[in-house]
Image (cartoon, rainbow, N blue to C red):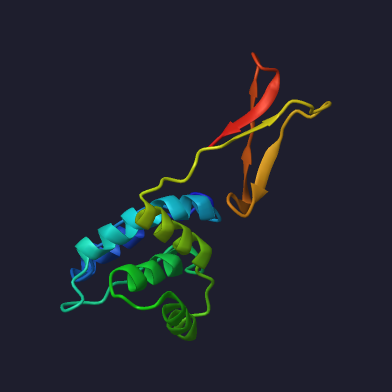
Length: 162
């Protein structure tokens, strides 16, 4: 929300004004499939705790409603409602043009089933010429949200531990 300079207060005010909407927040970094993978289980758990399908509808949103929200909805459909992932994907995308990160859901599912946490990694660049800044971006980080490597003065290299 900060990236797009969005103000949460009007949303909270409208929920309070209506009285029939419960706002539940669960931040997941935008354009970051790795963060989505790590946080999906807790997001879906919180969603399942807060929602009673017999008494209401739940509105799941992110900034644009194209990635994180659909992935959360799809994971909920799969893990909680028992809908096959491919069938849920077809249903969801038939109702809304979106691109839920299915690989993040599959990876999070494997993490849950195998009791694994994603493995932490380090990226180190020791030959950097005159570069003052090095960033990484890509499939697990997100192409639109590069992450800076930090200069480690003791090792004389740029490093990212994640």
